[in-house]
Image (cartoon, rainbow, N blue to C red):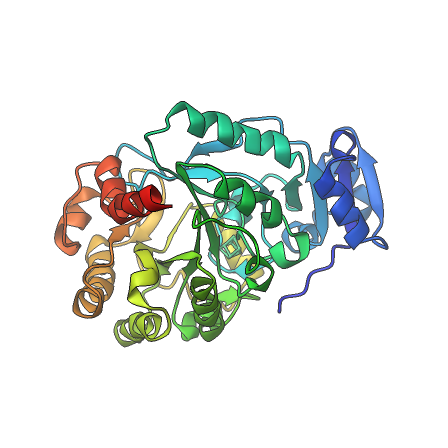
Amino acid sequence: MFNYRPEKIIIDKNVSSEPLTKQLCEKFANVPKVYVENFEWHKDEQEMDPLLNPLTMGKKILHLKYFKGKSIKRCPGFSDKLICCNYLSLDLVENCPFECTYCILQAFLNKPVITIHANLEEILNQVLDLTSQKPDVLFRISTGEHSDSLALDHILKINKYVIPFFAKLKNSLLELKTKSKNIEHLLDLHHGGKTLISWSLNPETIIEQEEHKTARLNERLKAARIASDAGYKIAFHLDPLIYFSNWEKEYQDLVDQIFDTVPQDRIEWISFGTLRYISSLKSIVENRFPKSKIFLEEFVKGKDGKMRYLKKIRVLLYKNVQNRINKLAPKIPTYLCMEKNTVWENTMPYKPKNEIDVENHITSKLYNKFQNI
Ligand code: SF4
C-alpha cells in the first residue's frame, strides 16, 4: 500500500473548522501546521528553497484550501476540433503523489503542493444545484482530472463524504479514476450504485518504466475485481497508449487480462487515448526522469496545441486494442479520448458526430440501470 505522510500542512484560516480539516489535523497530529490567510508558494515557503526541486518537494506539503470558484466544470480536453465524451470534472484535490513521467500536472499546476479543497459541503452543494436543475440529464462527474482520485484517499478519506452524497442524487454518476489499489476503505460505504471506479491501465513494462509509485497491473486489476464484487460500477482507460517495442502483443495481453479478472457485464466502458503532452512538459520530464523513453518517437502538434504521435501510429494503437475487444467482448462500449473524427472513422465500430453522440453511446446501458435504482 502506498504510504504518504506530509512534512507540513498549510491551512487556510477559513477552512480551519471544516470537518475534513479537523479529520486531517487529527490524523497528522504530529505534522507541523501553518495557518495562512492567503497561501502563495514562493512567498510562504522561502526557507525551503522551492526552486531547488519544486515538484518533488511540493508533493510533501498538504495545503487545505478554501476553494472559492466554480468547482464543477466541463472536461478541459473539450475542443471544437476534437470529439470528447462530455463528462464534467469536479475539483477536490490538485496534484498527485504518484510520479508518472508523462503527467501533464507537472507543467500545468501553478503550485507544486498537494491541495485539498476542504470546504467540501459548499462544493458538493454546487453539484446539487447543477444536477437538480436538469433532472432528465444523467451527469457523469469525475474527480480524477487534476489528481488521481484514490492515490491518497485511504489516508485522506475524502470519498467517505463524496460517495454517500452521490448515492442520494437521482441523476448523477461519480467516476473515481485511479492507478492505485486503494479500495478497501470504500467497500463498506453506501454507494447506491451511483459510483463508478475506473482504472487507467498499461502493460507492466510501461508501468515499471513510466508510472512510478503506482500500483502494479495485477494489483489494479485485483482491486477492480474486489470493487466490482462490492457493487461498484467499473470502467477502464487504456490511456495513455504508448508506442514501444512490443506494443502490439502487450496491449492485446492487457485486454485479455482485463476480461480474465473482471466479469464483462460489470464493465461499463473502456476508453482509449494515446500519449499527448503540451510542449513545456518535455524539458521538465527530461530533467526529472532522464531514463524515461516516452519522447523517443516522432510527435506532431495537434489543433488543440498538444503533441501526439503521427496519425498512422495512433490508428495502429487504437485498432489493436479495439480489435481485441471486438473479439472478446464486443458489447462493451468503447470510445476515444480527445481525437479527431477522421481517426474515429478509421478505428472505431461507430462514428459519432459530436460529444453528445459519444455520451449517448457509452451511457445507454447506464440510463436503464439508473431507472432501476
Ligand atoms: S496518476 Fe495521474 S495525476 Fe497521478 S502522476 Fe500519474 S498521470 Fe499524474
